Amino acid sequence: MLRVARPITLCASALMATQAFGANLVLNPNFDTDVSDWTNQGLGTFTFSGSDGSPSPGSARLVAQDATTPAAAASDCILIDAEPHIDFSALVKGNAGSGLLIANAFSDTNCTNSLNDGPLFGVDTSHIGTWVALSANDQTLPSGTKSVHIIIYADVNPGGAPSDISVDTVYFGPDVVFANGFETN
Image (tube, rainbow, N blue to C red; front, side, top):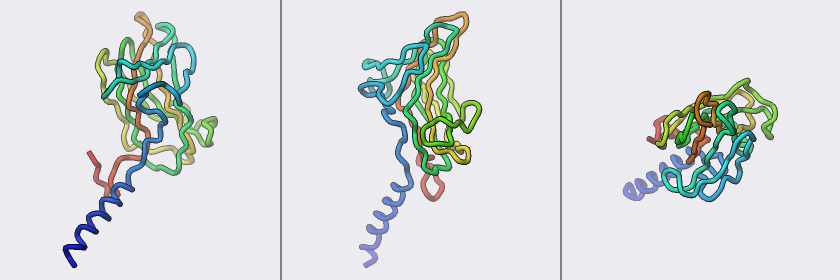
């Protein structure tokens, strides 16, 4: 009887650990075939690159219109269902200038009533030609958050070429921690 109980206990523990993880809330986070579910916010170009990406080809590329005007692209509005802690990460490559990924929190379900004056949190890149993993882990969302926009910026680059960044593998979702508090990686 004890030998039978151990595999069942192990399976039940594995199932509970799996249920503790949440799914990525971002639609089209890997840009495998296009930039659908993301919107160009103007003042630059936001395109799909089928030849560049990490860990495999397929990424989004955002290029500012000029060196003094930032460009932006936003994810579709992401609904939040009482997630107290969020992980936010992406693979980013600077092609010229610098870029920024931010997440803005809203008190409604259609991303119109901002809960914060500036970015909720952001990650910056100035690495040219190299894919870099950027993350902001275990972030606490403002009380009353019901939705979030992920925004990619190709920032201003005075005196230089227009900022140009590539982005892949965007993650925004529940903090990746087992129910017992130990991280998975």
